Amino acid sequence: MDELPAYILDAFAVMAYIQGEPSAQRVKKILQDAKQNKCHVYISIINVGEILYNVERNKGMASAQDILTLLQGLPIEILPADNQTVLAAAHIKANYPISYADAFVVVAAQKINGIIMTGDPEFEEVTELAQIEWLKKRS
View (tube, rainbow, N blue to C red):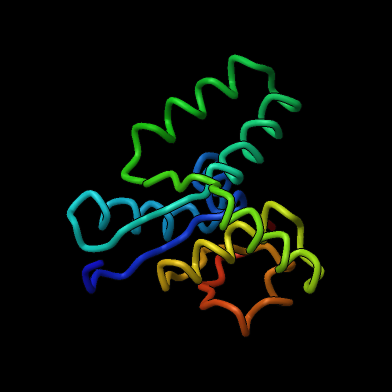
């Protein structure tokens, strides 16, 4: 792996970007940098699923499909959830009070030595496990 910074987006970061929330500009900047090969941006397939089920539940299947198409067009590498990743996420979930989906964000950050981008306060419980860039919380 090269020396470019690596960012791992959680559902909070992606939804902030999509919904134009206060932290959307920071996420947009990271995505622009990724397009210019100044950094790498990742998301776990588990977190993609988390985003899609929330969008479908609140806005319907067509909106969820639109979001998936949007994500696939962005300079974000979607990380698979292989056996090792699932077991590592289960271990984190067993030992820290965060959601199972968020545990995959932590595993991704550890695997690629990346920075988690989030505004989700649950991540305050895992600051010793991975580096976090705190996005502005929703007003």
